[in-house]
Image (cartoon, rainbow, N blue to C red; front, side, top):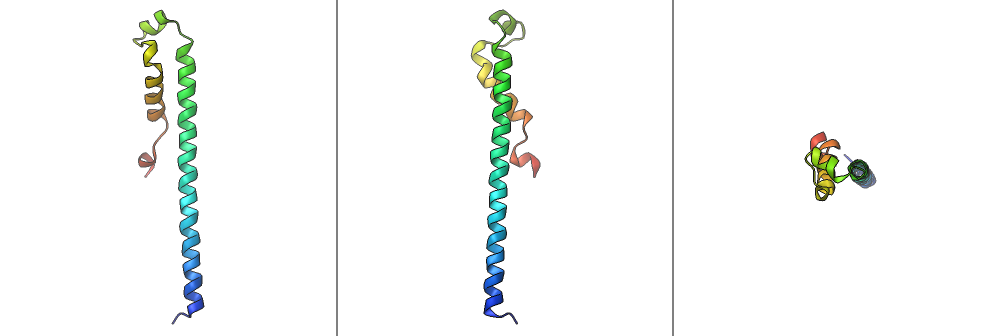
Length: 84
């Protein structure tokens, strides 16, 4: 039989474990957002240095750069659902 003190201590350890998992999840989410932002910014930089003719040669409009960079970042950095 458990004593009341053991029950309280077990509850506190469960709460601490839950809190630890929440912080781990938050850190993972932030790390992925940072990684996606880096890929996005790098892609925008690389495409932005091309002139309109070079962009047209590869089938991209200057107006598409930000959208394509976002798509590229989403495909490059796995989302939370891809890892579970």
